[in-house]
Length: 382
Image (cartoon, rainbow, N blue to C red):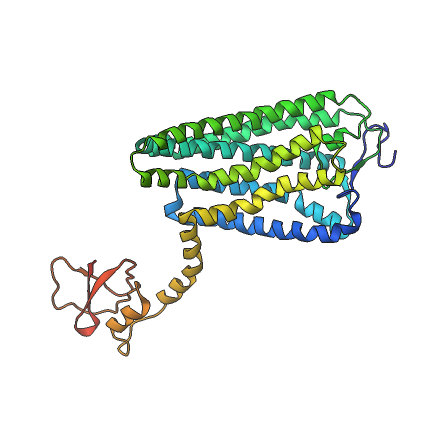
């Protein structure tokens, strides 16, 4: 067998075919792949940056969102660059061990994404059902432990896949009909007994996806019960509005996942193989692309953070401007809105409730400005 070692049963490398049957259209297919990947990387990295730099977002909900963004960036990066190399450069060869590493990270990160969505559902449950205890229940330590537990679960359940693939004899060639190394796509190349691979794959899917969906469903059942009992219609609307982004993320993630799962299990003969491959790629690429858009549109705090990110350059530029005799403080204040610069001087007298600003001090809140002699300023809140 071409690409096999001395035993003739284990290949030294695999050949990834890309999307079988659509080889002539690979260049055109690569364009949406590349576009979605750029959106995913830019959007998720932007979300992580905003969450890390805005104190208003230092809350459990946004910590979980940042973790989800990290998983999304890592997940799509684990296969999109290699897929684009197949489409553009025809670099289809991948080392056997590198293929196992790619397979492990794709499945592990998929399992982690499901786990983080489950943690986000529990976060919404605590926030709505136990609002007064929210800060004491979801502490930073609890969040770190929950994230570590999700990682550990995913690693432990996905690690056996590498050993199950490595033990198989391969006598049906080394051409993988896929854009990335998938567990069952590799197992189909073996002439050995792959029943245990199929059974364990189903068990892992149930332990991760099934358990997480059960917890998400239970959380939202309790949330609906709690919201219905609220007296005010406005309060019910506000409570539900905090969940819309998460519900959208669940739909974006689980609908392609279940569609991919059921088409593989029950549509093997009726659905063309290239459709299977396209669905499998969208299942991995769609959530990282749409999640930052959904959270950016639906979450006010994220929108405010994005606005601050793009206006920060203007604020920095205004902080470098100095007061001079040719620019009275009153006109300077009106010119720069909420940013006030004060030159040096000695105040001849100030009201007891006033706040005196010395050279180089910047006021970032709405204030009442009183201009004295020699460029002296008295500022009162309000």
